Amino acid sequence: MRMARIKIGGRGAVYHCMSHVVGGQRLLGPPEKEKLREMLWQQAAFSGVEIITYCLMSNHIHLLVRIGAQNRASDAQLVDRALKFYGKKSLYVQTLRKALEEQGALPEDLREGLRERMGDVSAFMKELKQRFSKWYNRQQNRYGTLWAERFKSVLVEDQPSAVQAVAAYVDLNGVRGGLVKDPKEYRWCGYAEAVGGNGLARKGLGSIYGWGDWERVGREYRQVLLVSSGSAGSAGKVVLDAEGIRRELKRKGQLKLGQVLRLRVRYFSDGVVLGSRNYVNEVFREFRDRFGARRRDGARPMRGLEALGELATMRDLKVNVVG
Image 1: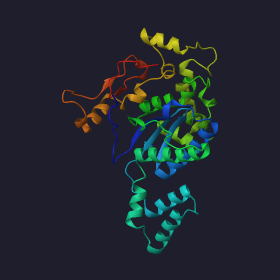
Image 2: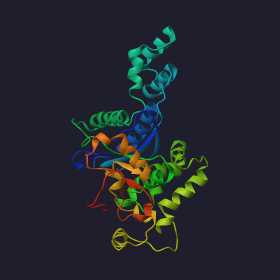
Image 3: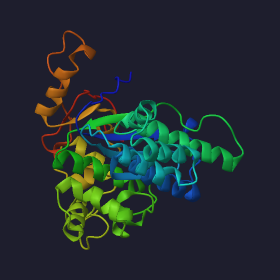
């Protein structure tokens, strides 16, 4: 049974968002992924959402995003975002610009209509998926839903160890899927785009550490992705395949973070909240009414995953934790 989404309002938060194509169909080929990647950056700029990293697969997508603290954009900023999003030929944009020029301010209904679409993870995901669905259906001469269900999300504590772990998990999707041996070779993930020189992608990964120096960020992050896992990109190291990693987990072997992240870890998709014990318990107290009367705290250990350190989740997963 899926636990209700937990969403922090009025202050900054990080979310790992996931959505699957209807029926698990592999409908997203290279052209579709490229268009979705383009729309992702456009939507983020319009919505005031920061993309930390992402991965677009053929039948599902992962986005790790940061929603800033409540920031009421000025009317001029709202019009500027709309202009960049819709283009200067849009009648909607022309209406906004005319109102701002003639009255010095936007009418209340137009202002609030724009603000409601910004700084909210649900609005961001809904609009991104709807825009892409419309484009896809036109291209394929089809109709109906493209996405299987409402998106899933995990609230992630905005601190380096938690965000780094989830970011690496997202960027290693192409490796887990057997598509590439090195995530920098998978075109449609944030890490590959950062390696390719995209400034926004580099800024997103750099935000994990609070550094702006990509050479330093790239080196640190790659340690998590590859070198610490003893896999591609690190000559002379022993490589553990997925089955070997599972065996080590069962015997409680000491695995490194990069090795663990080469498996599907359900805590990252179904844990509801992920972070330090204190953070998870703090969120639990804030949303106490959503849980049974017998539950005394929120934090649950991530069983068998000591490589993830002291991280905890809200949901206690006992079956098929890794796959």
